[in-house]
Length: 396
Image (cartoon, rainbow, N blue to C red; front, side, top):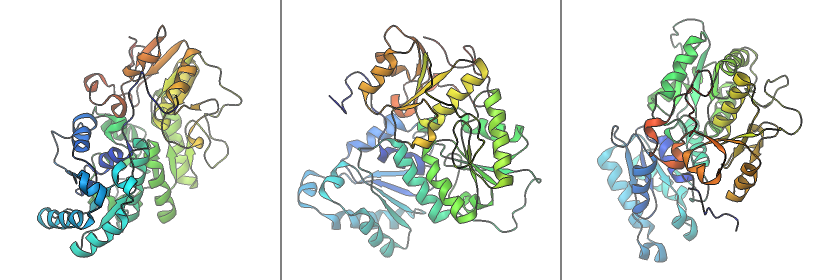
């Protein structure tokens, strides 16, 4: 039966992706849903919850409110709370209940913004899409509303400045990966700019337009990159610097993109010719990797370059075809994954995917958006490291 997972977990939803993307920016984020959804997000999907303050709330919509409708109560609660807490912005996040009853979150956001004088946005999440769509919606809006340029900003030197777009713990956990990304940028004689949205404040977004190029490290950062390209003419490169050879290629692409004002991806052509990592024909591989398109597409390419082993990406998440290499596949259903894994000898993925890989050689790659915080302590930071059996992905 389609759209049913009988053996594996499900990915974090779009509403939780929005919360994750906005967590550090000083806004008030309100999920318009029953009270249990907030505890699900904070206990399963948010590793920063106990170490960092953030105004994440739930409207706790009741059964009678869902049936009869009572937007005035929701609006009143929003205004009262905003006047008490003084957030920098307010984000109203949709969920299955408001989606089914037709709640107009954008209209409510307009009323709240008018009454409080605080920027307020309504996001049409519905819990039916993966976290990648939620991150994309949130970062796109944040880039539109707060992305800017600081005139005459002093730079350390004449090196290329690189923003990081699309970094959240749902893909990168809290294991030092973002810090490693910045170190990798410096090691390749470039300057790190704004990291959207880990290690970032709302005030930092005023410098987004000062970068020479944007590094998109997840599908969730792609829409924001397009906003910044349209507004400031900033090109973007899509990929995560795993491995030595792929990392060097990605660094060269960042510098070339900054100079030529063109967009690249390290593993598949985007909008230009002569982009490395493109394959002709169907990829024949006995090794598959399961996960988010940019993260795992980059890792698959790094494995191929560092070890010579061809790897096929199976992407169960919302993405775009242009972010998949030739031979890689979208596999939105459990049945799709079972069919592809059956033909593989080696599987790389979150430990919960072992349920589909009976008898296969399996390498663990924990994914916060899939298994939550269960494997936090063993989630490897692979940025800039040579890829191999003893380099962070362990066989089990």
